[in-house]
Length: 486
Image (cartoon, rainbow, N blue to C red; front, top):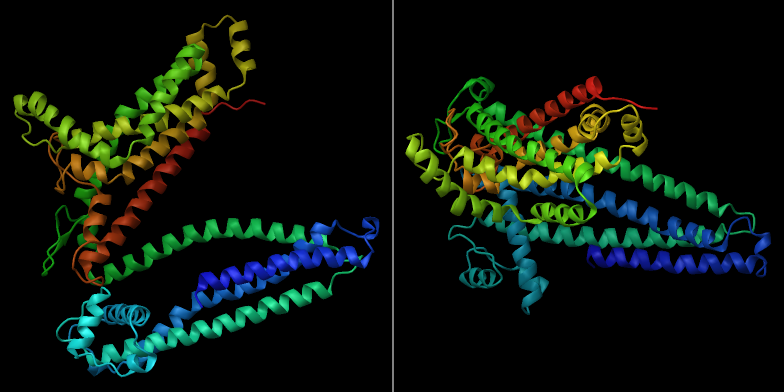
């Protein structure tokens, strides 16, 4: 039985419990609702909660713990000498999973029985052909120990799924009978339901927090593994980025940091003034007709896929800047440049600044405008001295969102700025960013445990620290310069 089908069974039993609980509550008072502590629906909800929640918690815990236990057991069953030289544990385990999946597909699509699967030989030509038909290509020198481990791994998974199904169904039925036995006229079903809702809200907040913690921990742990293989001095103090997959790599981060900041600075230099001025015009000066047309037109820019912006940078903006600015001035000959990516990214970020700033400016109370006008201020003075200081926190938030979007952008940089990691002040030269290199380092045939792959996590952690510092600085600016009104 699959996990999805088991989940449907739990929900179906809980839904049945809802109806039974509601009916049992009404029957306990012969239909007189005044004798019930809670409304009949709360009794049904209490049965639903006590039936589904324990079973779902057991299923979740099982699914989280099962892979760790099974994989550790599988790894321990493989004799160290039986693994081919140069193969890491992660690669062997990946091969085991892939072969086990192929055997499952083989059983599903053919007439082979479980006994036939157990008797298969890794070096059999027939086996290779059958697995190739279901999308699993085995090398000519498949390790027999790994193949036998894949068969055992598959059998353990099937057994664990059967045990989990039995346990979850038993917990579901136990919860159903227990919750139905508690229904009485004086049973505080509403309290149970409300406490469950509060627990759900707390769990949702906890998931959001733990997701952030999990992201940070994954970056920190993998970065620690990277620094065990590559010196932190070379990473933080080298100005050369030259990953060589055969050894002798230079993995200095500063060319990538410089490219990221340079492209983002140009993008914000384009988007922030245009977006903020557009927001002020739409909120304070434009008529309703103009606002109804211009605001949706600007927001359309936010719906355009970034790959389209990248193609626009590659085909239109890049050649234009090269032919009419860089080449005549003798400062560049390539259509891929920081200026190309920065300009196009700035156009993409205009809606992020203008729409949010417009909403924040419109949220400033009209009484503040009226008071300013009553003191004799002009409209421009009111905007500068009253509205913008009051809306500063929201405007800074909009700029922060645009900055984070610029720092994390990949496709526009790939197509518009190129992939050259260098330190240069010339905006018409090709450069690259941290996000582009993260993608390039995690794609390819390199082993996951190598420094050239693990460096992607160090880059991600560095990007996270830069973004966090940006938020701290913005928070300081907001607290220092914002105007507070009662």
